[in-house]
Each structure stands twice: as C-alpha cells, then as structure tokens.
Length: 512
Figure (cartoon, rainbow, N blue to C red):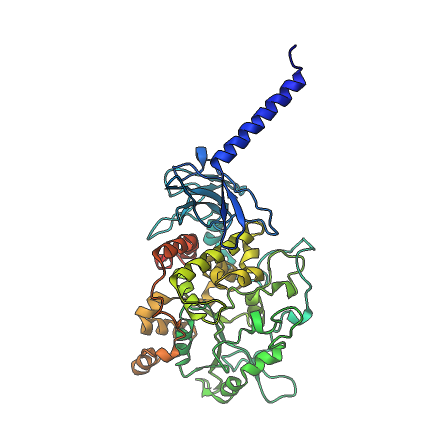
C-alpha cells in the first residue's frame, strides 16, 4: 500500500531536517570567548568570502545583549578556518582570517541595503576610495555626509539628531543637568566673561577647550599652548566637568562638582588674571586680552551620562552630548583635538593605567585585554545601534581598556561637526606635531587669534621638557606589543582612519 500524500510530505520534511542537522554538525563550530561565553560561528569557504559570494550571519547567542563577536580562530585538521561575521561595527562584513580581521568590500544602495562584492577590493558603486596608503571604502551614506559638510555652515545645533520616539529606553532626566547659559558676555573681553548683577567680580568660562584624545600627547600640547603669555588655565589641566564631575560616579553617590558654580570656582584664579590684565586698543579703549583654557581630553567621546540629560528623553542614543553643552554655553568656543595613531594610543593607555586590578605590564596581558575589549564592543553592536555603543557607559566600564572606543575617531568627529563649524576646530596630528613642534604651535596660536611669539620665545616654549609629558610608566618593561596584537588593532581601526582622512580633506596622514 502506498503511503498517503500527507505522510510522504512528513517523511520528506524529516529527511530534509536530518540532512540539514548532519550538515551543520559537519561544518559548524563553537568558540569560547575569554569571558567563558560560547559563540556559534559558520565557517566561510577557503576563498576568504562567504560561501557562493553571499553573506552568512552569525547566529545570536542567548545573552542579555546579542552579539556578533570578532574574536578568534579555531585549529581544525591543522588548518586555520575563516569566519564571516556581519559586523555593524564597520558597517560591512568582516572575515576573521587567522588572528586578522580582513575587510571585505561592499556596495550600499540608496535604500540602505548592502551587498557583498567579491574580487576588486575597491568598490566602485556607492563608495569612495581614499587617497594615499591602502585603499579603503567609505559607506555611501557617510560619503554623502562628508561631501555635504560645507552645507552645515550656519546650521549647527546643540542637538545632534532629530526627536526620539521610543519612550522606554532612556533614563530619568534631571533639570540640574540641563543647558547653562549663554550669558551676556562683555565685548571688551576676548575671553567669554560676564558681570553678574550687583557684582564687581566678573565670571568667566574657557575661551578654548582641548577636548582629546587621552594618551595622545594632549598634555604636552596643552602646556606648550599655555606657554603663550596670553593663555591661562584653572587649578589643573583637566576638570572634566561637562562629562563626568557634575554627575554621580554611581547611582546613589554624590557628584564631585555637582553645580556650575563649582566649575566657575575651578577657574577663579585665571578669571582674576583675565580681569586684571589689559591692553589699550588702537582706538584708545581698554581691552582684556587674556584667555582661559580647559584641557579635559575626554569631552569628545565620554558622554556616557547622557540618559540623565534633558533633551535625551525617549532616546536610545544621545542627541545632547557634553559637546552640546559646551556649544550652548559659548557657541564661539574654539576646540583643539589631538589625535594619535589609535593603536599606539591604546598601548600607551595600557602602560599608563598601572592602578587597574590585575595589571602586570606584559605584552600577553595587553593582547588579552585588547581581545576582551573587542568582545565588549561587539557584544554591544550586536544588539544596539553604533552611536548607542559609542556613548554607552557599560561598554566603557566593561572594556578591559576603557578608552578602546575612543580610538574610533571618525564617528566622534562627525558628531562634533554637527555641533561646531569646522573653522572652530583645530586637529593636531601628534606624529606631525612631534616632528615640527614650532610650526604646529605657530598654527595653533594663529587659530586661537593670539599674537605670534618671537623666535626666541617660541624656541623656549618648544624646547623638550619631559616634566610636561604624561607618559606611560612601563615602556621599559613592555617596549612593544606583539605583532599579532598590532595587526588585529590596525584592522579594527583602519576603516575609521579612512573615514577620518576623508572628513579632513583626504589628508593621508590620518590613515596612519
């Protein structure tokens, strides 16, 4: 007796299921991360691309935050296998080839969909190659933003993105963290100062901010700028009020500098210098020519208290950041951003932070901490937007090296350029600065609209002075990272270096 039609369908389906399970057992593998969590990967074919030229997604692990983790390789039969990972970090598929992440080209259509492209590593459709160095591709949407950057002139805002609609994702806002200022700044002061009603003592906020990056030479640059007789600063180089000191360190604790008055008190002494130092202008009027600096190198990236800030209601990523508050307080503020090769910057951070639990100053530990930091990042971007993870407190806290995300320069710079016009930002390329300190200082003084120094005075300010450097303490113990660690980090940061180069007029120095 022949089986019924329904029974045949059930038998066929069961056979197909068994065949599929057998295939998965044959080709799939599981990798255990440094944290002990297992992740399932589908191996790519030997060509280094996904099988048949198509993307293969990594199945999501059952975690609180889903993840697609670029992490490691597996030895199988004596050969290394490649794993395709749909990686929102780089807006493109990535392949782990051994211990290296290989970037695959892609095209991005107007509707936002992407298609993997095999063959030529330079994509012609929907992307733009970068001049100088190795060719990288720029996402279509980002290319449009970069080419239209000039159109932002005159349309900068305290708010980075549009209104937020999801009313369940942000935390409770507090009015004490709202915008401050602007004040009726005095026209006979170069620095932004105002005279409170009924007072004879002016109050001042900084004229310029050195906003980053940490362990990128910002301390050296700051003190050399301060070598100009017209520049003064607060009790220390850094105050970090807009992003950290005004907020509680953790829930239930009190902030170190909770009020705006605390911030003003930090600059009380330089405010006195600004008020007392005057020159006579050409028309015979008295002019207060000195300026105040805030050298907090975390402002550009560490707005991880954004959920508390009014304006971020219902947001899953911030539309108001620390730099939004700087802009609102003094829209004409000048910004200086010192950037260094993100790979060596991260290594310097590791060697500097000797206070971290378990620190033992070794290349092996640095390699492990880099991979753990990457795991934390990919854990976030597997289940949230890129910008959410850029400013997510837990990403910074859970990363073995907390400033790992700070090296994704281009995306923070794009946010910065939506708030401040390009003419108010001076970018210092650390490696070029180190080779030509005097020339760079001339340009910075000119950017700050300060009178030029004499050659003798400039030579004195430019003289080598190790006491002004905030160098890592363990270079003698660990002079170099492992080559494999360096290669892993270079591949991680390369797409963002290419974006930064495109943003800054195609200057190939930013490719590092």
